[in-house]
Image 1 (cartoon, rainbow, N blue to C red):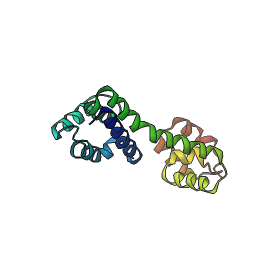
Image 2 (cartoon, helix red, strand yellow):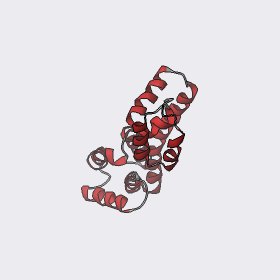
Image 3 (cartoon, one colour):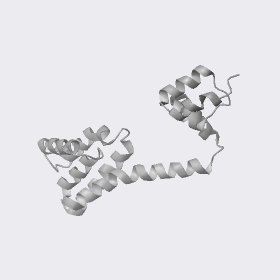
Image 4 (cartoon, rainbow, N blue to C red):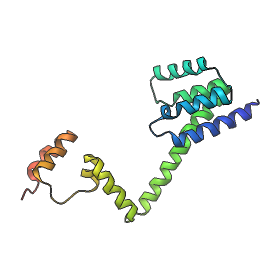
Length: 161
């Protein structure tokens, strides 16, 4: 297989895995293993296990295993392509969604998303959807769950009628 073909295969493999990797690169590791070992024959099972062990032992982000797979498949160029392919799609998707989010502050889907997030996270609730009045028990619960000393200090200034 030519180097260019290998680089394209790496870009496609890790580009698609990037968009499915909710929870980090380890979430798609079985598919990366299947494609790298079984489909493309870039390495053996033992090589893959060794690369995974090295990536886990090294400090840094958990997608280092993708960089090492690229290195094993196509050298330095493969490492760069695999890393870029693992990072770029999800970064671009996040950027585009953030732009859309900022353009439509009054959209119903945005308001609904903020309300849904407020139900899941006390911190987001406190930051995004501030109710006008809190009951003392909910305010204390929020402060305790956040361990936020500023919120605890401001408890005395909340209207408790």
